[in-house]
Amino acid sequence: MNTMQGFIDEAEQALLHTYNRYQVVFDKGEDVYLYDIEGKKYLDFVSGIAVFALGYHNEAYNNALKEQIDKLIHTSNYYYNVPAVEAAKKLKAVSGMDRVFFTNSGTEAVEGAIKTARKYAYLKDGSTDHEIIAMNHSFHGRTMGALSVTGNAHYREPFEPMIGNIRFADLNDFESVASQVTDKTCAILFETVQGEGGVHPATKEFMEKVRALCDERDILMMLDEIQCGMGRTGTMYAWQRYGIKPDVMATAKGLGCGVPVGAFLMTEKVGAASLVPGDHGTTYGGNPLVCAAVCKVLELFEELDVLANVQKVGAYLEKRLDEVATEFTCVQERRGTGLLQGLVFDQPVGDIIKRAMDKGLVLINAGTDIIRFVPPLVIRETHVDDMIAILRECIAQTEGERK
Image (tube, rainbow, N blue to C red; front, side, top):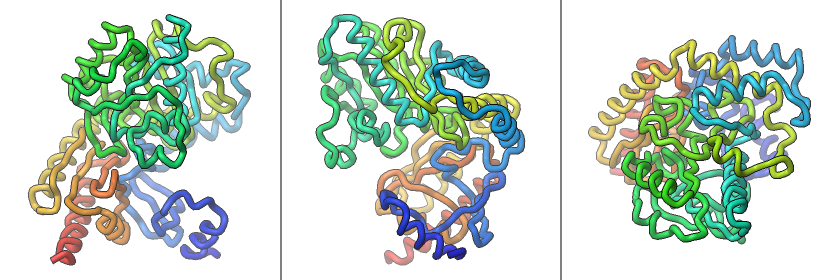
């Protein structure tokens, strides 16, 4: 079984088949590279789906986790622990928010945000029929609440009925949002940059209008920054580019750089008038191990000047992807910001991604016709050049087969 195919065959017998996995077994990582169990080296432009922001085998990060393992891993939320307090303090400082609840994942952070919105509205009028407006083409997670606000019917239909009172509008179309608002609307939820839905950034104008509407009607503006946050667009959180602050925000992925941790955050106004003891909880969320990781991640972001690197290399990645879009007729456009980019094709991209994998480049899609680029935030321009060289070769081969 110690061969690549042996492990794959064993996995298919033991694991529930909910993923169509690429035929590779990764064994270790170093910097921005992955290595499979046969020793082949891969340039990683997926980073665990926007998770491993600091790259692989960062010594300071690894040591912080090892030290915490030797001290204390878990106690439960019936008690305080130092890493959770320190992590919350640091997260408040970089986010500008006031209250933090640590979760195990991004989807759990969205669940907490939904409950926050409903409790906030319930305390105002005692009613339980409030509505949330979410966006078409959005993706917020796979649990029932997060799935209910995910704007893709394909994901929802097999699991109906969803939680009720969810309406859908279109990102960057304010009139579509305004038309869904009723006296029962308690929150408007969207990703500041849609990731799975095709790498669509929200515009400043759209965010300003939604913010004004929420202020006028005492509706909570809730942003999902799970994929686009933690520095990926060049600011710690994508909304900070515009200075349009949400009432509630979900974060995860790069927050822990590999350990299972997320969080939902809120303003003091919302925190003082929503969830109270008994309303929400988690056994593992915010335990000492994951919060030690959060602390070290936030420290390293500052020490390594990660945001400046994202701004510099992100601009270079945009330039090189624009060149590819101009060169190949099958590429319709590039869109995105920072190190969250997408190339839109006029055909399915599965063959291109598979060819890239064979040539030692790890890519991922966003829908059937978009290649998404979410590399570690510490990549350098030379890594972009290496990626572009392989990508061009793969696109050319695929185009050649079509002719």
